[in-house]
Image 1 (cartoon, helix red, strand yellow):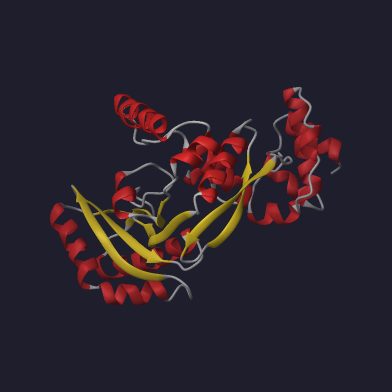
Image 2 (spheres, one colour):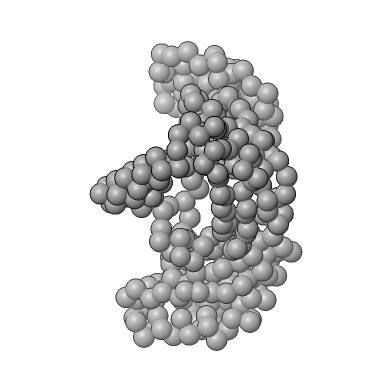
Length: 309
């Protein structure tokens, strides 16, 4: 079947987009056909997204379905930023991918002030990745029994979980929250240098198989949202998830005036009025100016999952 026949079948609703690959020799060929179909169907031009350097064969195999091209975002650098950490001890340039004008300039001024003041002190105080399935039981009596099973069998469950990975370690299962006849055990792992979401999911799934084998109780979902993954939640703030880092910097008044063109008193006043009072008035969960666009830009530039912002 040639390209034109495939597009005609797509336009007629006789073929699905994901079926194109069955009739093409490569993912790249399927991508081009898919994009041309979208252009005809939507009466638009998508030639710009056809210009890319990615290995789409590899991307299609691991990272995306129904590809039609790529988008490009400018990447800039801010810095140098001096960090005085236990692991990171140097002057660093920070990559940010963004289309927001003035973001790099603002971050760069902050880096300049921090570095001029001797650098920021930083320490990693927590390192964990979590997965918390939702488990349905027949009654609160059985729910308590399941909770006790997790508590009493921890050493055995730790061995089962760690049998699935050479890097992950099950540190604890805590808290184990019961809501009615539902149980939410929060599995806490250390995952080394890996972010480890797939690692902890596979390990937890193995433990849940043991739960079903012993008690006949099954999990409704591998993630019951107590993890909590990609959502703002108090439990992540209190208990931590991923790398928990603290940092501080004392910037002398002279550097504030020279680098930031303001005063420490003015910054303090705006911080109280905006980040504290204004955020409280809005019922905000995030008492800050706007760190999300900076973290998001760094995540995009370094290939991280931006949904975690």
